[in-house]
Structures are given as structure tokens and as C-alpha cells.
Length: 459
Ligand code: HEM
Image 1 (cartoon, rainbow, N blue to C red):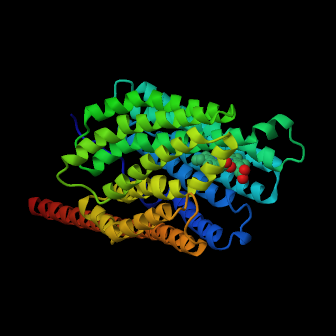
Image 2: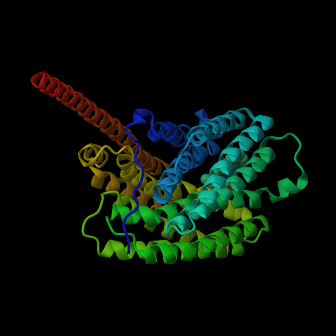
Image 3: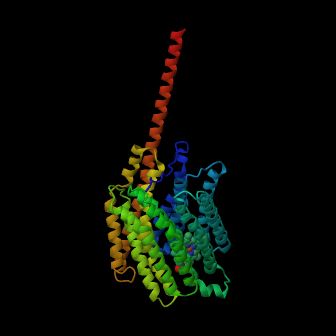
């Protein structure tokens, strides 16, 4: 057993332009994702690339921006590596390069411009390579630190990010180029399956599960259990092997291999991450409200991964597996990754802005507004979607649309509340700092006049 990790909050010196200001990208992408999802559900005809656009607004815009930001924030909190000189600017430049790349990719996919799509892919990969290498080096330097293995999770995930983006670039070429080699067309379904598995399972999945270990225990106000860290550490090679097996299975056209990989991933997640967290949940004394959406997201992830593994085992070809991925991805993102993501934001944004317990409470109160209602409404809608046959067909299209809109609306409320709570907390923090500065100034004036009086008395 040992102490909880301390996460760095934006310092008074960095003020409103601190790390939080880089997060405006994630917030902007959240709004774009909500708008494109609503459009894809209610008016797909008005959206260019109605499947690709909302999917990548979430996968690249929200999830990838969020992971760039938060993996950095966590790694610095866990390993305490300093940011001196150029390193400060390179963090910001990296996020800008990533976002210029993502925006260029959207423009290219909407206009069918292959060279722009490939340039955008290179920019996105460059940002990923840079952050991955920095984190790998820092994790290596901090070998003795008990949290170094958790930062290794991020380094591995960044390697997989670059890999999936390169594969994405290949798919974009296959989709839009006028002349495409026959082998690429023949393997397109398998390559798309590998792209999804490496992107969703490897990049998003490994980062999220790695973060859940320390974050979940912090939310539970539990001391960091060294057994939790050890089992997470030993699960990492299994996660990586599982992603590799499932992806090779996809490209090789072997659905059974995809199923085996997904099952291995599930076993690593349950044994290495969820079970230790569950032990701490059972003995918790108090916890943040964010632990509930986090748990809901984990339960959904386990159930949906198990269902997908079974479907892969019985699928006739990888084309069927690809169709299943596309069919289920919405529910998987909304029920699993989405809930874990908003739970993390709800807990971390007040911590990251900081300002002391009283100021932090201002953010906490705003972000947790009516949280049980949001959680219940979202999960009830998700259960109805699933039971009603969202995966296999069975409820009417109108009911399905209403249920999807309800789910998206609960996320929209989450996004607004996170933004609102951040603004409130930043104002409270600034007011506190100003009050401190005024009090300090007053004290200085009083001290000076006392000194002058004392000098006058001595004369
Ligand atoms: C440079 C970055 C990326 C590019 C160029 C890219 C491109 C593509 C393309 C062209 C498709 C095929 C769309 C279709 O056939 O309709 C696709 C599908 C997909 N992408 Fe990406 N992508 C990128 C990054 C990502 C990331 C980071 C993730 C996950 C976190 C992701 C997840 C997916 C998923 C789940 C699909 C659906 C698979 C399918 O069509 O069967 N992509 N992407």
C-alpha cells in the first residue's frame, strides 16, 4: 500500500492559459461530435460521409485529443517529470499539429482529395510518434518509480495509435483513389477490421484501461493498492498480444482468430484491471459520483466485448465481422467508452483546474448536477436499445431514433456541464487569487508603514 498519486493542476502562473486551455480542442470536438451524431441519426442526407464523419469526430476528435491531453497530464502527475524550456512549447505545438491534421483529414474525406488525406495522416502520426517517444523515454528513465508501468501503457497505446492511423490512411487511399491495386481491394474488409481493433481496442482501450487503475482508485479515495498496479503491469503484454492476434486474424480473413484475440483482451481486462478495482469498490468508505458512470462503462464494455467475441466465432467471413463492428460500434462507444470518458472528465477537470478544496468544490457541484438522473436515463435508453434489438433489428426505426437521441442528449448535457463547471471554477480560482494578491498587497503596505513609523520613532 502507498499514497495516492498527486496530479498536477494548472498553476497560478499559467492561469487561464494553462494546460486546460489546450483542452479547448477536446471540448470543441465534443460539440462537433454531438452535432454530427445528431445529424447522422435524424438527417444523414445532409452529412458528407454520414458514417465516417461522426465516427471520426468521436474517435479522432474527442477520444484521441482527450487521450493526448490526459495521458500527458497523468504521466506528469505519476512520474513528476519537469517541463523546461522548449518542452513546454512542444506540448502545445504537438496538439496543434494533431488538430490541423484532423481538420485537414476531414476536409480531404469530404472532398475526396487523396494527397491531402495522406498529408493529414502524416501530421497526425507525427504528433503521435512525438508524444509516444517522450512518454516511453520518461517511463524508461523512471524505471524505479512504481507508476512507470502505467506510463508504459500510454507509450504502447501511442505506438498502436500511429499504426492504426497509417492503416486508416491506406483505407482512405483505397476508398478515394482512382486506381487502387487489386490486392488492396481484396483485403479491404480485413484491413478495416484490423484498423477498428487496433484503434478502438488498442489505442482507446489500452489507454483507458491503463488509466482506470489509478483513476478508479483515486475516485474511490482508496490508497493505491500495489497488487492492483502489479496485476495491471502483468496484463499489458496480454493486451498487446490480444490486439495483435485479433488484427492479424482480421487481415488473414480468419474470424475465429479475431474472436480469440477479443476473448484474450477481455480476460486481461477483467483479471488485470476490473477485479482489483472491484475489490476496492467493495470496501470503499466514500467515493466521487464519477465512479458510477465509470463502473457502468466498464460493465457495458465487458458485456459487449463478450457478445462481439461470440459473433466473431460464428461469423462466416471477415466481411461479416466488419459489418458487425459497424453495427455495434455506436452502442459500444455510447455505452462503454463514452461513459468511462465522461466519468474521467467529470472527476479530472475540477482536479486539473485546482485552486484548493473550496474552489474545487465549486467545479464538483456544477459537474455533478442531477448525475443520478443522467446516468439512469442514459443506461435505461441503452438497455432498451439493446433489448429492443438495436443490434439485430426488432424495434421500430422511430423508437430507435428517439432512444438514440436520448443517449446523445445525456452526453450533450454532460459536455455542457463540464464546460460550465470549468468556467465557474476558473472564475472562483481567479477571484481567490485576486483576493490573495490584494490581501498580500495590503499586508506589504501595512508592513512598510509600520517599518517607517518604527524608523521615525528611532530617529
Ligand atoms: C489518420 C487517421 C485515420 C484515418 C485516415 C482513418 C480512415 C478511415 C477510413 C478511410 C475508414 C473506412 C471508412 C469506410 O469504409 O466507410 C475508417 C474506418 C474506421 N475507423 Fe478510421 N481513420 C483514422 C483514425 C482512426 C482512429 C484513431 C480510430 C479509433 C480510435 C478509427 C476508427 C475507425 C473505425 C472503428 C472504423 C470503421 C471500420 C470499418 O469501416 O469497417 N480510425 N477509418
